[in-house]
Length: 227
Image 1: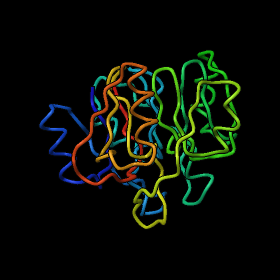
Image 2: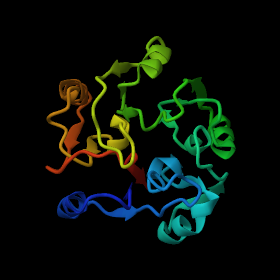
Image 3: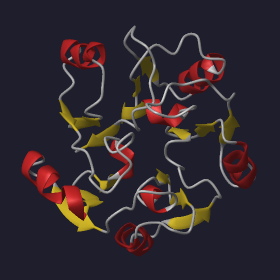
């Protein structure tokens, strides 16, 4: 297993991963994206399952080379502006995939062929906006919450002031990712979040441990487990 992290990740976070013996791969900037977010894993890479990932064709050779044993498939190229920069920013949860209707075509077809059902939300940065647990989703995006509250187990969190390079506001889901069924990793300290209690209590309910270093929490794109 490797954890895919942004190449802008802070040294303190990378040192923390080494300390707890988590193997990681840093992203390569996607030349088609806005330079401020070209490093974000969830804007160029989508994990289908443990053996298969679909990546933007512009960064295909890098991931093919650096992820031996994984079937890396080349997908469509993103574009610099929204919504075409968000075609890989999809939530896969239980038997569903959740996104707007501009999902990258290879991902869309692959998931439908595997029997996943599509749930449409307005927010194109769906993955960035969601903490995906085993049995529930936590989001601060009211639109996502409103669309899904009668379909899935979803909790509404507070809007947080999370730093995102070059932007006024980052996303909570862009700070974290599940390592496995029992561990949720954040790239910085979450104890001062307004939504800490919601995250803690829901994770505890699902027997999930929260793991995070003492450094500042940043939106550098969702942490993605590969393999």
